[in-house]
Image: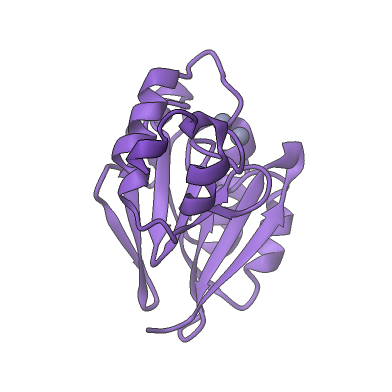
Length: 195
Ligand SMILES: [Zn+2]
Ligand SMILES: [Zn+2]
């Protein structure tokens, strides 16, 4: 299989955006088109952006989507529940199980409600882009629309099904892996037997 290149772009309000490209074809996806869009567009130079995907509807993660689209021409995508919650539009409303192609790779969409009703994670090969559903050593900041119980259920039923070696790329802070979080993240404390 072809090589995947992952570039992290540090945006305003400490949001991580990611430009993920297929090395063989130079086709790519943008994950979390926050602001400033220029910083993302810079990283997209020389690439064909197929999809511009938001893990959820919080402004820091999606505020630059129309600007990124205007320059790169990629198709925008957000889960319908967050489109509704935050009054955002997109070219495509994502649902659990969707598969989006770019180059020799596929983005698999997992609906992981909780942080927001339409939070999703994007799995590409053995990499998962998890937004604010799980961060290294914690979870994303709770907001009025956060349903913590639902979030824990999403983590347990969707993320924990991925291979433990899966690399995790959160919406804030450093990258990590599923096995590292299982060992260290306080949200799993007391759930050790399950791991
Ligand atoms: Zn958020
Ligand atoms: Zn966030």
